[in-house]
Length: 353
Image (cartoon, rainbow, N blue to C red; front, side):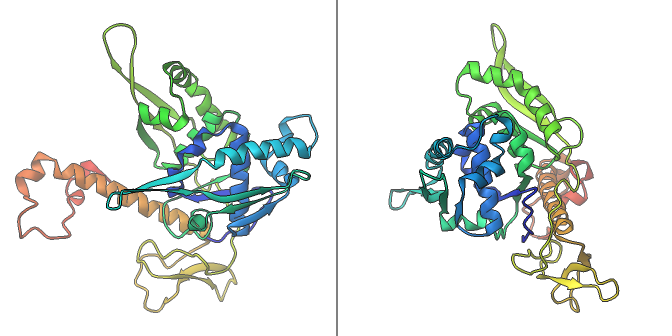
């Protein structure tokens, strides 16, 4: 997607494969603010190597807004040093079973820091370029940086991104996975996290612009003999706010995705009568699609998200229907005369939309 720069409301956008870098969740609140500020700059400049002044990073991350002290290059050098040291632990691990070789691919190739001015240069590993700009695949996550920075707790920040990464309205996650994501390893820290969970959720709703109404949660325990019980899973329910982020568009075909309904290439067009630009099919003469065009990038992305949700619901419905005793009694999936495109979701509506 191609978005016009808006320095008053910088945007962070990433391919959800970025979620593999779970080490990001263990960063401190300040480190996360600085790190995602850098990512927003990389997205805007559309370059794997960016030079950033210490003052620019301070302004974007809002570091001094919550503090009475003035900008100090020495203090900024210390902050950037800490952040880059921790970011250097962010990598994707792969193992080649055939050759019995381990491989680590680091998110950044290098950082250069001027210790006098606090200006620094960050070099993203090129293979990850399309994680943060020129994003060509779905799904992706997008949020306004100021809302993220306004969250005071590092746990609120991790939960916020977790909900956006699973923007389906509900999510069930095992307690062990959740504790691993937020970095609570001891029973005491896990209990404290669960105890403060409503505080984190309220902060997310109050300070960001992404959810309508409260975020509900339910902690499921496995009761054992003795006092209390063991955490098993947590269920979250939330409602997406429509048009939560409005990004200005640049009228260019670069990185435009294909139509989510027919798969044809899209291009920017201009209405001859109104003069308004819109996104339409490149070969509109022969296009056989239910959608004639999209108002802008945001409209297109909403349709893409709707198609993705429908496909996910269909998969869930098919899996549920195939386990239905009525389905098993009527249809045998192994029968040679069963149509290859048979969709049980259309028959068993009770299993999905």
